[in-house]
Image (tube, rainbow, N blue to C red; front, side, top):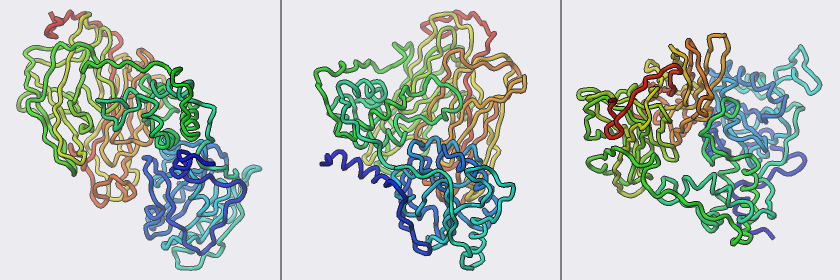
Length: 587
């Protein structure tokens, strides 16, 4: 008998694709409005892709060599037909393929059309997909008019120099010309579709012996009282009552949140969460969340109850008057000036932003400025995002605030359904050891761009150059609602190129820091760091304020920014500054 929890989980995930050939959709018949996940992890519907126009679809997996060979050809065909109003989409049906991996392939391939994930097999069943690659064509009424191969060039046994009949393209041409598709179905070969759906339940696992330690380490830093997380996961009861939801978001790689491609760079700030731990947590949840002997569970974590994670601060600056927030709607950026003038040049080894109502603060950026100046992004010091870490420079390294400056917060508040109030504070800790190096950063950015209406992957580029030998500290990505992906590439003086970071599915709600291990990343003088970002101004972007608009640089979220931050210290710098720990002034 299926447990209620397992039944709920199967409802969330959908039933698995059955062994053997899936039921064939009939040519000429309209397809149901099936659901899938986009690269933002959001549930979407087929009608959002089709939208009263022809739609070409490719079914693929990341590990099928034949599918990987055809991805560039599918991308090339979309470019060729883009101006003629044909939609394209790639549907991933790999049981082990994650949404971030699919987004990574989208960036690598240069595709300007949606890549989506069929987790439960309902999309494959609706289309009658049997193998990967398998290509489909729908007309403007969402009727299936072609199913088969793109052409006959790539085969399981090798490559034919002659691609033969361009079956998919000719089917599209027939449709655009108003003709009946001459060849509606062709045979396909490739990788057979594997069973889709949730992983197998693992009833042998228990909370006490196997799961509690994983949740303590991977979840509880955020999921506990007083944080921005929506609920607590401190006890067995907390976790068991939400086991189906946890299984879904963990299996889909939405939790723990992390947006860097695993192919590029090793980051100290990445969640320590292995694939086996992911499978254990999901399998345990689908088995009904067995408790085991709760007396044998590890002791509860003890959390520091003090407000400041940087330790006892030397100076705390508080917003003079709380921000009043409406119950609903969109709140534009608000600029908060902290009422303190730094009378002297000041060195700071740790800096932390803390809201008294974390659930209403989407993010906040802290910088310094002087009277009569506007908020300048080059004077950025640190930021706050839910789940993020405070700025702690490390021994002998400090941030610099020039004399005569004030601190200002560029704050993005969100509504919760009820009127709210919030007050932000900033804590500073001054250096105890001599300051040898200044914490510096590049803003690899440009404000000179225009994103055309309906552009699905508009590129924007910028670069900076290291003048001195330097050691990298970390990177930070900032775009607004149309930001799709961003890639940092280092070009070294010896001719090597290296991708430092790729964020293939940028998420405005999770603006994370990507920190290297101390001393792990070096940049010789003359190294250029280039940033390439893509912006999605299409209707398929669910957060797009206005796909008909031409979008330019601006401070508000309805505008756009393209900013790649890279924090570093100069390797040979040795200032030897002795700082007064009471004031932050150099003696």
